Length: 394
Image 1 (cartoon, helix red, strand yellow):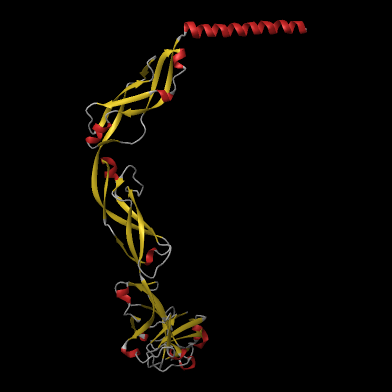
Image 2 (image 1 turned 45 degrees about the vertical axis):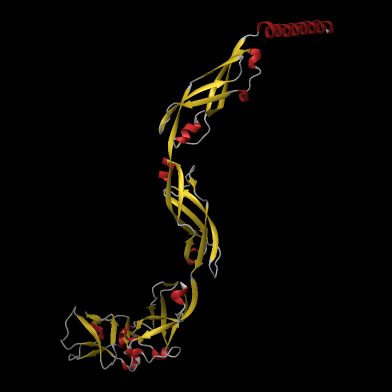
């Protein structure tokens, strides 16, 4: 068995040596011709200066590459790498728009080159320059508290390929107001060229990349709320007859607008218009002044209450002008409860529930299935509302 293996090993060694000798013969004596493909070889445009002198640029500005076939003897091809291959392109009579770029390549004197296609299409754009307004985008926690942003330059020149410049809709300087300053603050804001969707436009040159901005914040101030009453209510005393909630507010505005303000007036208050003991009253904010509240609540004290509400049961009703002894409350569908709301004038004397009697008035006689109003007598008040306001006979 061992002798057999030794015999096979000798055969294999002889075969390997024969192959090496044959390969050396082929390479040294025959040296066959072959072709190899090299891809993504960068293209150098030879007349780029001519193109630029015409105010034209390649757009989109991306690396131009080509695939090159290199043909030659095998020994020479083995010495060629992608770095040894140079590809050149020339645009004849360049114009704005689509142009043919004619290609040629060089690698070594001992090989030849060829292309899948010896031309490619490139787009040339006219370089234009325009002056645009600078807009300011303010974000951050204190964005609403900024008064003014004064830019050192209100405009900037932009240049680049025509289609890029035409797509620019904003030159935006951005400021994040994450801190509030008591005095004017100066910052350098970065400029960006943006399209209609607020996306950045590439390959656009700005005359300058940042702009200095002086940023001032609105001034804040606490002031008292001044209730303004109608003549009929002018003798009311705050803290005794009424209270305001809140009675102090924080206003915001430019220094020139709020420095001389010590209080903010309410709209005219007429307590005769109150439907309850409290009412929301609008504030009279001067122009240029803002506040987180546009109204306050006035609460009348119990002694100055202008409204009373009484609740009656159905059996507390009486019959008025009843000439028929056979007619009683049993002849009516009487509600379980009756709500009476009294509204006083400012100088009205308050009355108690015991002094306010409710009646069903039968002065027109009694008929079945008829609605009879619920009435009252001898109540000197501004108004009285009764709910429900009638009962129905059976």
